[in-house]
Length: 498
Image (cartoon, rainbow, N blue to C red; front, side, top):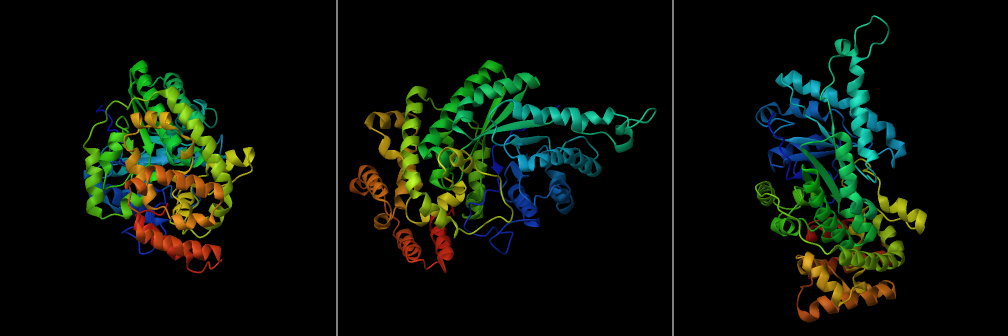
């Protein structure tokens, strides 16, 4: 059996784009348009893999049938499950109790998708053989999915409904694939730091002897703990996963969920080399909607091909003790600042336009902070859109906690620090700080002085400043008519919504 291709590029459905996708006539993507989106990502952009988020209300579970029937010539040459892959993101019943039984429905649909492909191609290449499970905090979560599939989805084919009857496999047909790969997605601070241990336990329990993919979140940790905290958490995890790979004697392939906004990873098609340098050991990167639709198609395809044609390397070395101290310091300061900003963010978030029809998966911030501090924020993309729209880049929050010693440690493992921070600073509207809490004004101006215009290291985006001044004026005077259009206008300057 040939070795499985491990994708370098995973096209996702994250709604961070400001421009319309080229295959729709309007700004909101949903329903049949997401089938077109998957085909577009494969055929036009050359992405290796498409994420199919199964947690939304209107998710189409017949995606394989529709892809193959609507694009037969393409998938005859580029086989789904071999040349191109479809990754299902399933609910985690441990956290998402309301959608728990949806998981079972999705798992039952996988053999049906196999049958569809088998009827078309008359072979045993499974179009879907892998799922991603979010918010994993223990090896029990992915083990349950893998074992449920083996024991109850595939396992029932040998059952007889009554004595002397034929087994279900002779009545219904065989259930394939025989096993299901599960990718754990780690999103909390504790889970990301424990990811290597959890993966090791999962691999040993399931007796996996070839490879294991592991997904590290980047956006939600930034929302929860601050931008640099999220980055350092991922770098520590990548270092630990590399050691686990050597220990287990199998390939461990990290994935990282990065968006175009600097706060969410600064992954843009004009500079793919920056992220490859920052995360050399990552196997799979995530071109999200802004990456795909807010830049010229030619630029996007070139960037994706650049990533597809490079090989991963060893991770960047991180002094873990120093990094964890920095994470804790930034998190503490970031939380203080977020508490006073929350009323502004939550009110502004009401005017951020939607880009997907369905409700995407739940966020961790609402759950964790609601119980600890009584604080609820919007999801990461809407949060970012709200912050940038008032001229306050969220990357600047928490940074006043760092001293020169911390900065030296940070520079040693974060080569893109100045590049990322300078881009964030270009969207800072200093005039708007007058209308925000004094603590925010003082801290942000301190960061701007230390890293910013006084040393000439960044250029203010005057067009962005102009529109964010208008947004702040409308926000303060409660002139909300047209504010969403201005949010979009600012997003087009940045080339991402949030």
